Amino acid sequence: MDYETIQVSKEGMIGTITLNRPQAMNALSNKLVTELISALADFEKDEGVRCLVITGSEKAFSAGADIKEMAGMTAVQMTMTGHFFPLWDKVGRYPKPIVGALSGFVLGGGLELAMSFDVLVASETAQFGQPEIDIGVMPGGGGTQRLTRAVGKYKAMEMILTGERIGAEEAKTLGLVSRVVPKESYLEEAKKVANEIASKSPVAVRHAKMAINKAFEMGLGGGIDFERELFYLLFASEDKNEGMNAFMEKRKPAFKGK
Ligand code: DAK
Image (cartoon, rainbow, N blue to C red; front, side, top):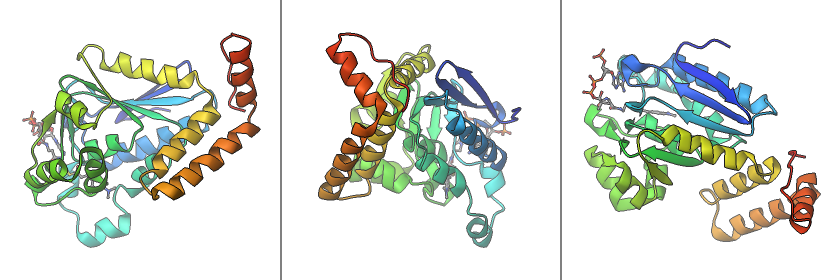
């Protein structure tokens, strides 16, 4: 499918989506959001795709929601259109793992979108921030919740109340991203992680992702019960037999997602 604001490609078991509005620092316009939902839906259905990489440009992953589009919106319009919620809902419930390959500006809704992915690989040039306070609003795509869980109350307060940006190394120290690499290799590194994930059992990966995400919704006891049920369930998969037999036969497993 041809898109205007994103590019989509497939290499082996990896589907890549590149945000592509260079004139606007990859700001999330309504068109981009619609196209992103459509590309995500296609990769979700494609059984050949086991892991996604979502990236932007070296200069900007995304500078957040398109302020020029948002400026004229009223509270009633925001509520009645469910502004951006369909994308957030799609990514939040996405069954396949998503690796974010982040460089340059990762701001506002751009950071909130990234924080709903599963693994974050950053270029050393990446800058993270929630600058909504500077335009008279506040984070609306989960930033107050996900950033606080990632970096703790005090740093989240500082970033959200002052709009201050942090660099990639600080983001890694705070636990906001998992890897920081030179700017030449962030996309390649993200694809490497994605390929590693794609080589595992898709059934096990999907359930492990579900269980980790429950850590943000449930108390410890409920989360551990949920994890145990999923663990037992995996004993119904062919991939479990393949993985354990391959270990005992000292060979590499060939997982089928069954
Ligand atoms: N929207 C529209 N255009 C943007 C933009 C944005 N967010 N960011 C940059 N641009 C445009 C600029 O207007 C400029 O366009 P022209 O003037 O050339 O036409 C072009 O990109 C280049 O930007 P600059 O000239 O400003 O470049 P600089 O290097 O000087 O600065 C910057 C780059 C990224 C630091 C700066 O542009 C900036 O501060 N941008 C705004 C960042 C921001 O405030 N982001 C937060 C937006 S609010 C929700 C989900 C999500 C959200 C809300 C709800 N739900 C699920 C309910 C998200 C909200 C937001 O993200």
